[in-house]
Length: 57
Image: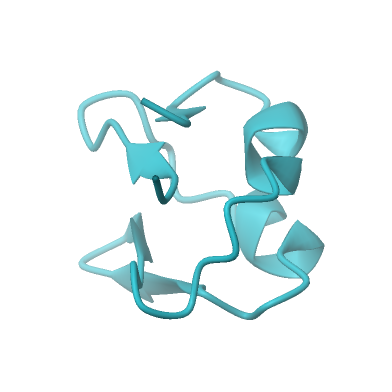
């Protein structure tokens, strides 16, 4: 299951983009968006998000 971004919590800091080894996260309208087809389900972005906006659920 790919990472899921809670857009109500995401601040657009881009920490997840820098951490993502598969480059599956892009910014759209100031919020992180995960490309499910590129995401390798590693969970690195979950640990890097300072506001806990990303989950693997």
